[in-house]
Image 1 (cartoon, rainbow, N blue to C red):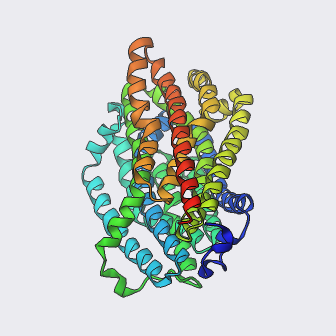
Image 2 (image 1 turned 180 degrees about the vertical axis):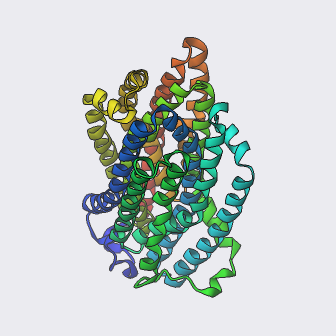
Length: 456
């Protein structure tokens, strides 16, 4: 369907009136600005922990990362599911239905995360053992886990509100609140390590908690001057809406959830503090910065795709997919090349004075930076398929880099070449995931072209 034939109800929205490259750049850019504050916070985190708490502190980060990815997976599942359905309803002109989906989804998600937090508090020692914690760090890791998860309910509501702020065409609100959370969190981490002397584990755990928990600051801004307002009557949940939300968000749950499982497998395969600390530095800080670009591109792309899908403007959906892939890869490689050029400086900055750790990080960092641009394409295109409700494709791509290819490749490569195979197996999975992604993109292009020719 051409732009000129769009429904009248969509004409007031910039999602269907502005040129795709500029529109994507706007939402990508504003989302990235908010995430950039998080990225700076994460790099400062690595510097403070690496230099203030050393290899032990970085190893504890490695044990906490699977839990961080799990909460991101769970929160993102609901955030994407709710925001996607709301964007489609708005594209169809059904504002009250969109509001109800938001409010009921928010209540249900909050109840679920409270149950999960209670279970983790009770079984924290078992959780620590599962994520690969070594015996000598068990006590400090259990303490860190119990403090960290207290903040999850605030993170859940805040992250959902962040997705909704973009659907409500208020991306600046999300960026400002995320930036504020990052600033407060990093100030606390510095104080806890260098002033109060409680960096490990309490200071670190509180830092992780408030860095995501303060996203809840978005909610008052979303409630005011927006159609997305929660009412007491919304506590009565329509489970049909919940099922639809979960169906759309489930691929993201698998993507981030597979990241959590992947981290657990890596910790157990490496099995020593030096290797786990090196993985924490590369994956938790350097790769995190590169993934931040991909996540910004994905979140900037999704409301545009969902809205135009609801308006049956398939030409704009197709163009958004193409622009997003190119923009994401280009931006990731700009930062990746910088990390390669300054490999020693970056590694030294994050590892402190541990020479062995610095060499271990430098050895594998170049490979990850070279392959991330293509590897992360699978994650971004998985996000696209979520937005157009092609759950099967989204799920396969979401699992490809970590579960379908990553874990098997690590075991195979380790069996052949030893411990270094854990690292090179990950690199091979990036290449395989990219090839699979391009096959799915070609299939999607043909599907959209057919819909455009049919005019439906």
